Every structure is written in structure tokens, then in C-alpha cells.
Amino acid sequence: MPTAIAIRKIDGKPGSVYYPLEKISLPDTQPKDNEVLVRLSAAALNHRDLFVRQHLYPGTAFGVTLLADGSGTVISTGSSAQAKQWLNKKVILNPGTGWKDDPEGPETASSYAILGGTKMNPLGTLAESIVIDAGELEEAPSHLSAVEAAALPLTGLTAWRAVMTKSGNAKKGRNILVTGIGGGVALMALMFATGAGCNVYVSSGSEEKIEKAKKLGAAGGINYKEQGWEKKLVEILPKERKFLDAVIDGAGGDIVDKASRIMKPGGVIVSYGMTLGPKISFPMGTVLKNIDLRGSTMGSRKEFGDMVEFVKAKQLHPVVSRVVVGLENIEGIDGLFEDMKAGSQFGKLVVEISKDNGNSKL
Image 1: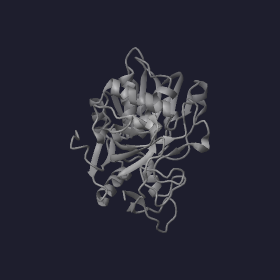
Image 2: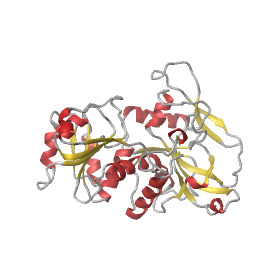
Image 3: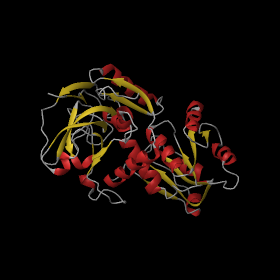
Image 4: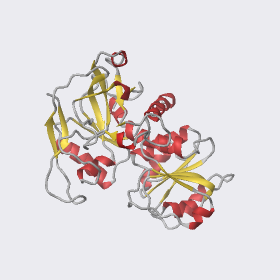
């Protein structure tokens, strides 16, 4: 029987509880008509996984495999032609199901479900294997290792929608600010925006993270802990374009108030998360500048495919912060969660479940 990692129930209130990890056994499942069996090589953490352990995520469930990001090899298929074409191929999994191609959002909100740790979807990627519909696969970009491929899906999809679909400013010469650099979504947003020809600037409370971002293509960066950071940002913008066209933000707080002062009229702030709190201010000065605040969450199956093709075309490499090896390494996996709690990571936190036929590039 294949094994997986889930959370174990203990007493505690949402937000104060921290559910321990436990190894579980999954039933042997054979793929049906349009399904495939994927032997998973690697799986990656996202902030939602930490929220699941703290019971701060909707539908938190026990005995359900954790994590939504995964890469692996198809080792068995159902009888359909679509399923059979995947046999022996290295793949990455679409981290959410039930959203086909509507640019405004899931066609039916109740049908959209993300993999990992909730009652909305019984599947997760922190396991030896997974049976999933063949339509949810993309071939893993050949220039990526299994670990890098596992680091791509959820953060890549979220960043792609925020930058390419929602911002309307993924164009050559536009000035884009990506806040909170170091997180997986922010780093992929940096790569997508620079790949589209934008001048990308970053913010962080860590000078070290800012310097690392510059090496990845950022045109400059500012420390958001400094008073008047928005004025310092203007100083490093191109002399012919002393304003921001768009902001890609995952923190919330006072970002609208601060950034709108240095944005062009009609600029766009895309919010894909609010780690500083569930509310965001929107002052009248922002209204008078016709600045849009747009929410953005993950993305459609079509956007997932488009994102993977862009990664292939531009030969992009997701940034991996740290890797631990093996599902039996509960202590090591716990350590990855501790990195996320502390916000110390620069890039993705990945569990290498099995060696990629000995050809891992990391």
C-alpha cells in the first residue's frame, strides 16, 4: 500500500492549534478510464499548507494527503487514448480542479477544489503515488529537475494569473513592483514580468533577499521597513518613467496607500493574498487616481498550460530554498514548515519523495 503524509487531530482552537504530521497508508487504487497513476518524485509546500496545520484554512481535514504541488512519472493508465499517451512521461500536476478557462474565475465556484489537506479534494501530493484525471497533467519542462518541477505548479499558476492575466501591464518597459520577494509566488512573478520585458522592482524586509532578487533580474529593490520607502523607490525608477504601472502584492496592509502615491493614473494593484491581515485599506486618493485593486487567486486549467509553456520557452527555473528527502523524514518535513513559519525561505520548500531515476539535477 502506498504511503502519504497527513495531519493528526489534537485538541485546540483554530489559530492556536498546530496539528502534528503523521504517516498514513493509502488504498491501492488502479486508474479508471481517463485516469493515470503517477509515481511522485517530489512535492512542495505552500502557505496554505501551514494554514491547514493551524486550522485556518477552509475544510481542513484529517487523514487527507497534504500538499498541492507535485511532479512525477506516469507508471500506469486507464483505457482512454488521452490517458495512454501519458505512460512513462514525466509530469507536473495542475494543483486545482474544476476551473476550465473562464478568465473571470471558476465556472462554478462550488466545483473548484485545490489538492491537499481538505475535505474538498481527497487528493494530495505528499505521497508515494497519486491517481488523477489525465486532463490535469502537463509534461514537466525537460530543463527542470524533479524538485524544480514540483516547485512550479501552485506558485507559478498564482503568479502567472496575477502578472499576465490580471495586471494588464506585462509589457515591455512597464514598471512593476513585486512585494515580499522571497516567497514562491513573488519570485515567479519576478521571473514572468522580467520575461515579458518589464522593469521589475522588489520589496523585502531583508537586504539579503533584495540582493538575491537582483541577481535573478530585478532592476532594483527597497526595504519596506524603512520610513518613506515609496519615495526611495521613485529615485531608482527609470528617469523617463518615474512611476509604477502595476504592483503585485501578497501582503496587504497599507500597500494601496503607499504604492498609489507613486503609481500612474489608472495603475493596477493585484492582490493575491493578505498575510498582514484579512482587510486592506483603499483611501480616497487612490479612487481619484482611478487606480484599480484586483483580487487574484490561483488560475484556470488553461492558464496553467499557458504558464508551463512560458516556462519552457524562457527556460525559467523556479527558485528552491531547501529540500528534504523521504516521506519517512517527518522531522525534516516539520523543519520545512518551521522555515515557512519564520519566513526565512528564499524560494520553495520541497520534499524529494523518490529519486528521479537517479537523474536529479539538484
